[in-house]
Length: 293
Image (cartoon, rainbow, N blue to C red; front, side, top):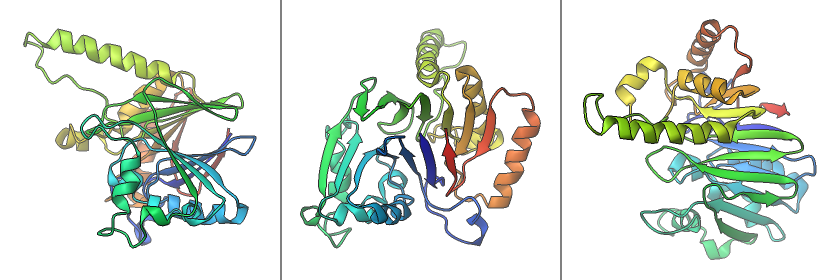
């Protein structure tokens, strides 16, 4: 498998001179199997340049797995050029929203309403197929097996494990480790902590021994104090998970939108200095970075 980062920024796209090195596009990762299947994780603004690249290899069959439907993870869908071209097959996967009771088709349908976009869904020329998926139920695409797992975020949110070609990837999308909402002296504390421990073990098992672990690492531990509950993790929580899962490589991603390239590198170097003997490589996700597993 080969993966390429097309967008590594969180929350809102941040183009400009201070984000040129690591990139300002929001989340999008392209995974290509040895047999040429195209699997796309999230459709942030990074899916736009990915679509331009795919125009050189028509016809395209692309499988787009959406972690969740917050804007920064779907806002590139209407700008994904292959979706307008006859002969292309675009297959979009996502969960059933427990609040709206609607599947992933709602995301694109809402975006292509006349109030928000000049082209209607009925005018798309590619074959577009929607697939509602469930936690723990794997999907096969060629030789690849993609398994969604439910992760903590303020909306229905999947992490995805991909196993193919003897290699494995886990991508969290947006993810904040569950924390106990009760104080230790409250009666509910132990019962809720037991639930947290069970859920964390399920997540670690899903990530176990992956070759590449790509984690939402939006905040420093100091920043997290005032952003607890916002739905994002820290550099330290990512490293802890990588250790527990025995990952081979850890990629920090979903970079805080106000953070410059220089600030990212300062934090990255600090993390390397504080964790000198990890058994896995720690990497700062970078737009345009190709990784061959």
